[in-house]
Length: 199
Ligand SMILES: [Zn+2]
Image 1 (cartoon, protein in one colour):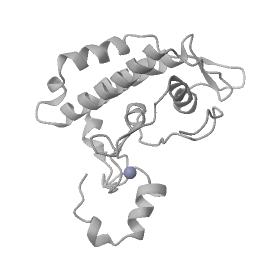
Image 2 (cartoon, rainbow, N blue to C red; image 1 turned 180 degrees about the vertical axis):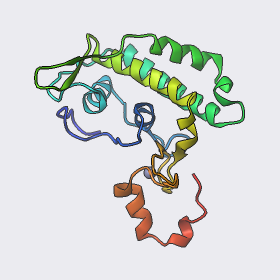
Image 3 (cartoon, helix red, strand yellow; image 1 turned 30 degrees about the horizontal axis):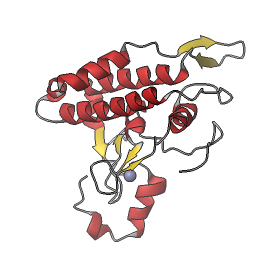
Image 4 (cartoon, rainbow, N blue to C red; image 1 turned 90 degrees about the horizontal axis):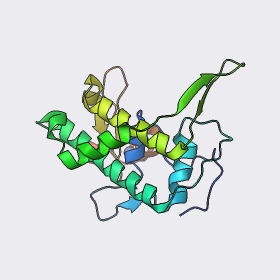
């Protein structure tokens, strides 16, 4: 793992189009032999929140205790379970009750507060910056799972990428989580071998 980073260092991947999807990607290659935990320590979680949360760049995000880290990972997997169910035949009702309870408990938490400062900027703050972002993630997941945007959630076609993203392209035919990474790699390879890779 990289050493603790400056809050503004882009260490974690973003750009999935939804906070809950970016959070899901912190378990890389989920469901494969090569699954890699990016939130290995509580400091990793604080760094993720500093990078992807809504707070000003100079916000110091306190490192939470181990219990919060475990809860965050459980929440992340509940997000995956919910969205997997929601994309399936049963829809969001297919989310098992344990995961639903976990999501609901997190979603009930305080989210970041926003205020308009004198320069016209929206400034987000929270007493508990990590907990507030986890509440945001849970709400985002429930909202996404129950909205029409769900039909635009795709799995990246990159052969070594299990990331999901929200396809906001007008024709709805985006195939890669990111053109800079998976899209480029794919273009360098022959089109033929990628053509049938759906997920
Ligand atoms: Zn990808």
